[in-house]
Amino acid sequence: MRRTIDPPSPSRPTFHRFGEGAVVMGAHYANDPAHGDEYYTPRRPGDDDPLIISVVKLVFMLAAVPFVLLWRHPVATPTIVVGLWLLFFHGVAFTVLTLTLIAGLVVWYWRAPDSFERFVVHQVRAWWRRWRVYSRGWSSAMHMCGLAKGWGAKQYAPHVITVRCDPHTDHVRVKLLPGQTSDDFAARADALAATFGALACRVEEDKPGVLWLRFVHADALHEPVPPLEPDDPVALDALTLGTTDTGAPWQLGLPGTHVLVAGATNSGKGSVIWSTICAVAPAIRDGWVQVWAVDPKGGIELAPGAGMFARFAHEPEAMVQLIEEAAGLIRTRADAMRGHTRQHTPTTRDPFVLLIIDELAFLTAYMRDRALTKRLASALSVVLSQGRAAGLCVLAAVQDPRKEIVNMRDLFPTRIALRMTEADQVDMVLGDGTHHRGAHCERIPEHTPGVGYVAVDGRAEPIRVRAAYLADDDITTLCERFAPHRSTARASGGPVVRAVSTEAEAA
Ligand SMILES: Nc1ncnc2c1ncn2[C@@H]1O[C@H](COP(=O)(O)OP(=O)(O)OP(=O)(O)O)[C@@H](O)[C@H]1O
Image 1 (cartoon, rainbow, N blue to C red):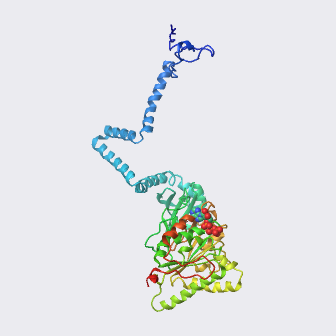
Image 2 (cartoon, helix red, strand yellow; image 1 turned 90 degrees about the vertical axis):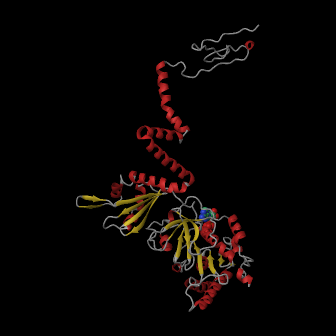
Image 3 (cartoon, helix red, strand yellow; image 1 turned 60 degrees about the vertical axis):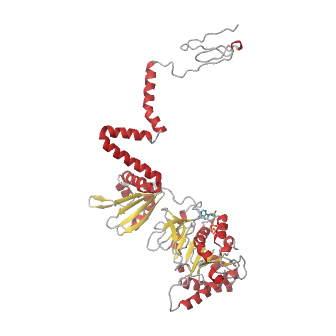
């Protein structure tokens, strides 16, 4: 016959020592195999609290309910609370109107998050930043940065006109004090950035007496830009090569200019070259743009794209020959154009030529053969001085922009400065005063290759950009998609042969 043991009263827990049975709180059965499996019913802590503690706990639990609801139902809870509050204090009509407005905002955010962000989130952030940052401490910040002025007993600070925000930058439009110039602010840019807790402050003149202070809080160019799908048909005067730090596309025009890309080793000069080739690729396929490529680094950088090139040379003699050919083409075109037109129009019979020279300094300064150097200098001066009108654009990369290395620097109207080793190289590339106006190329981190500054016509301040990056696979894909038909370009140091254009083929 089985013996039963009555459970003890829950209000009076029984404790046992190990060996005698399990020590548990609450109902207990002795660990006696003769009476079946041991079990116990654990009691929740606090069951035996005095009344006052239980009441306090209950109050805390009730106070936590709204937070728990908000946590679990972040949209429904505030909607119901706001709805009830409106209904109670403002009546039905107002409640319906407000809830409709809120629902409209929710739908806007859901259907078009980009425009919602631009017109609502950024606007609210701008109001907040203006009130919190650019109003309260503004005068004292200007004073501390040496940008306030005194007249008699009074002190004056520049006036904030507008504040705009995007995810990375605060744009503050400021009216200068009499006697101030944008250079005064540019000289204090680092101090302004530190005062307002920004990574950098860029100063841009808006109109006389008014400027924009761009306080950069996060680097919009931190992440690499993936390869960009080229426009088809190609617009040669607005090729998209990457992105600017405002998120806008970085566009470059080739007709009527030559482009110099300067940057230390591994600064990403190759990415500017490949982004340009990618942007003109559909026109290469269609035959009205040709790429002639010169790669003094033994063909390593440009060889993967040889299938896209009408000419390709990487041996000293062949490279000089190729540039002489370009000079010859320019002379022929100039003869044909004289008296008819002043600007070349590209066609498949007479295509626009993009002459790419990777590491120009090798050709101009480091080539040992003096005869070749002389031939090169003469051909290059024709190409750079007369090529623009004749439908030829030189895109050249250089590591060292010093005058003695690139003595033809001034013949490149468009310049791109990537990461540099020294601050004084910036003005050599982008022009006097650009470093002072914010093009701090020596501060570009090594881990962001492809980031640089570009001087833009009509704007005193350089813009910060990042070129799209094409990995080897992307270049292979590009060649497969856009190589011109029956290209006869060869990756060799020997003579190079013109690619057959579509129109010429048809003929
Ligand atoms: N735009 C870019 N975005 C991300 N990574 C890049 C970009 N451009 C280059 N890189 C990376 O940086 C490395 C060096 O780039 P690249 O060869 O273009 O530099 P470079 O300036 O031409 O150097 P060098 O003068 O030594 O030839 C590349 O292998 C690539 O990994």
